[in-house]
Image: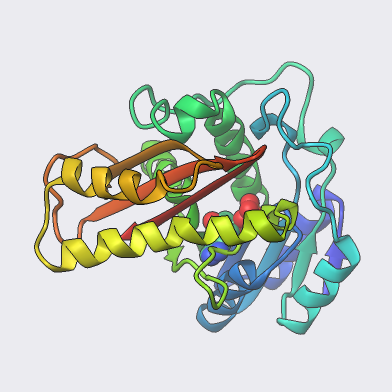
Length: 278
Ligand code: AMP
């Protein structure tokens, strides 16, 4: 594996080596876990060259969020990437990724400003800005994203469409701990008690999915059942529970195989998101 931290070297390398080859790209913020590794392993199977980036992108963090404390494990991450057969690990820094006064990408007014976009205003603008830059540096055939960040995935698909990017976006399944907790780099913030509480997030989603499986398709009722279940745990503060279709439009009736039940909660200061595709 080659580790690079210069944009021009990475571009030159890829240009020379990748004629007629499929390049996969897996952008991450590091502190890699099985969720990330599942993206990498899918990328490895479906392509000739795999490029992974690790960059904690400052523009997608809001004031007061965890930019400074976001977990960093550069050496362990590099080792994992090497073991997974990653060809290029790109570790840029913020000085090379941003100028002071830039042309800015704006998330779309509807899809970009609901749910995560409403709770974290500006987050998606920063995310799209960096993903577009990384896409242009790597120029991948296929780019891999987790369904865990469903709204992010949807916005990236829209960016590809709106800007006519010649990149295939591959949506990857959510990887969970054995007890159901969706893997996340931020899970390390949870203490033992908070982690126990957090299990109720996926439990509530599973109940909802079961209800949908039993042909209950009224979104309001499903959401109410999830809220009632979670209300037993006063330390879980619900930010939102909602149901959207694959186009991310909020829907009153669940469309089987075309809907996503999304939840965001806070346990103490720790914000967790999860979802289930039904
Ligand atoms: P992050 O490092 O959190 O920015 O995540 C990088 C990529 O990994 C994103 O496409 C995420 O959606 C994806 N990802 C994060 N957690 C998981 C998970 N538990 N299962 C599948 N993909 C994930």
